[in-house]
Length: 110
Image (cartoon, rainbow, N blue to C red; front, side, top):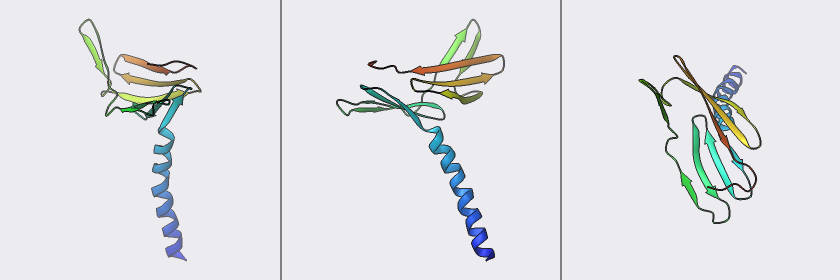
């Protein structure tokens, strides 16, 4: 009995991070494109008519204002919200607070 309980706990402990990762991976889609995301941003664009996909190893950015700069790899980046046509991330680092919004409306293409 004890072995079965430990096994159940072990499986649960393994599945919880997988479920969290699966939730973090998401997409936006219209009749033209499918845009895939993970917890750090854009991962792939797929043209639904041709079936061609462009994959991104990293979705990084940097911002410079005067002598101050911010890179997306620094600070706490988190998924703030997701809706049918938008996905918003928020990055907080020091005095910086940046919101990154991806939007894909019906019929939009790149």
